Length: 75
Image (tube, rainbow, N blue to C red; front, side, top):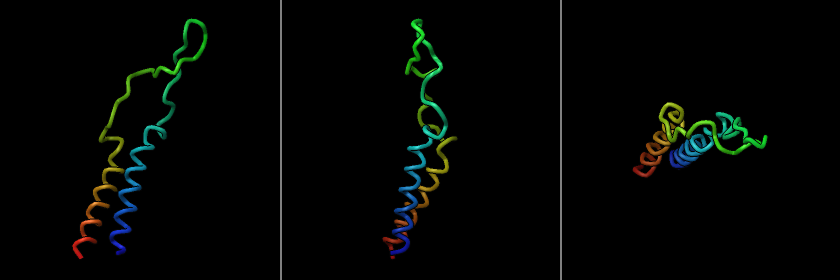
């Protein structure tokens, strides 16, 4: 039962890490000014999408959690 709970926590933590990664990187938008002098919500550059380089800790946590879930189910 402990393996199952540990697997659930690792999977949940990995998904949260990947979800909050863009927030931890910095501002989503800003830096562009309209001719009227107001700030716009348009990002400076297009989004990079899902990247392995920035999300590898979350992917490792999800993989370990899945392994613990399978091991707990087999016992």
